[in-house]
Image (cartoon, rainbow, N blue to C red):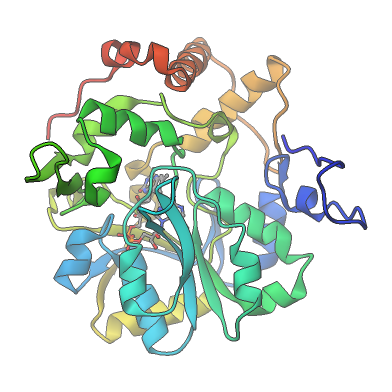
Amino acid sequence: MPVVSEATCTNKKGCRRCFDACPGHSVPLNEIAKNCFNSHETKTDEKIGRYLGCFTGYSTDYDIRYHCASGGMLSQFLIWLLEKKHIDGAVVTKFSRENELLVESFVATTKEEILSAKSSKYSPVTLNHAIQNIKSREGKYIIVGLPCHIHGFRKYEKMDGKFCEKIAGYFGLYCSGGRTFYLTEYIFKERNIIKKELAYFAYRDEGCLGSLVAGGISGTTLKPFRVAERFQQYYHPLRSFFKPRRCLQCIDHFAELADISFGDIHIEPYSQDTVGVNSVIVRNPQFLKWLHEASADGCMEIKPLEEQKLIESQFQKRQKNTLFLKLEKLCRRKTPQYDVELKNKITVKSIFSYFFTLTQIFIGKHKILWFMIFLLKKKPPIE
Ligand SMILES: Cc1cc2nc3c(=O)[nH]c(=O)nc-3n(C[C@H](O)[C@H](O)[C@H](O)COP(=O)(O)OP(=O)(O)OC[C@H]3O[C@@H](n4cnc5c(N)ncnc54)[C@H](O)[C@@H]3O)c2cc1C
């Protein structure tokens, strides 16, 4: 829950715009979606929000498809939009050895820069500086972010017409929940990876869903080292140990306020794929047209996808977090306001799940308790 610090705020007018734009305390999901996506062909689904069409697909460039998080469609689409001069750049997030936090966002204006930011970053990412950065440039830009990032930008748009003019659209990532910086610290610790020895790191690389890949020169033996471990084998067993608590209160899985959202599709027959495949939800008619043009140009392969199949393929975050929200309220915790009816009823199972999740978060936050993660870890799925 944000609090404006009157003592440190440099804005003498006391405008509180930061508070108003902050998605922490409220997100009028339905109202914003209605204003943004109101073409006569727009459909509405309780779980995926407003949309025009759903697709599966992948980049036809093998390297992009293989090395990106899912099927490389997000990066490939940005590259196509840049090459066709529909946009002048995109705000993306890359690893940075210089940055203490390991990740940093920037405005990419070339294919190489877009690819330098490929794949998923499972750590907190701030895009706040994107506003000033974009406003100081000529042209139109896309912002790539998680549902919560896009909530903030959509709320901010209303207050800043100049920023709004520079935005070509938002590319959203589906999100079942973010992770704290401790996730990376924990996985490095478990595998004896030393951050300063790294020359390369990815949470997901080399194929569909991919693997953690780390490489560099060992400081003790001075020999090159390489670690590769399947995503589902190291990430899924870690349950919610490193989930930020605010993520339990988020009901937007599919980035409902993005012009187009990208995710995995790990369900038969797509789970047989070993190179990479995406699912995609399009909400803005302009992006639907461009997606078809990009596909006709041969840079990506797309096929229509039934909504039901898409929903089946995903973790039911909205259902689960609606119950968590109700339980948080019952425990008198402050919760964000949504203009969405929270229908599900609290059950014994949901109460158990809520307290078990809170226990995991507590353990994840306290390094002294990390030995318990080893005991409470889930068994990795059989692949
Ligand atoms: C925290 C998190 C949770 C996710 N949860 C799910 C899920 O439950 N189900 C699902 O199907 N998919 C989920 N995804 C999305 C999935 O991992 C892929 O990012 C998505 O399928 C796009 O794949 P791609 O190959 O098209 O993307 P790529 O071509 O690899 O491009 C990914 C783009 O996203 C940007 N990016 C990566 N991480 C972040 C971040 N943390 N914040 C802002 N920008 C970022 C990169 O800079 C890059 O531009 C999640 C992603 C993240 C980061």
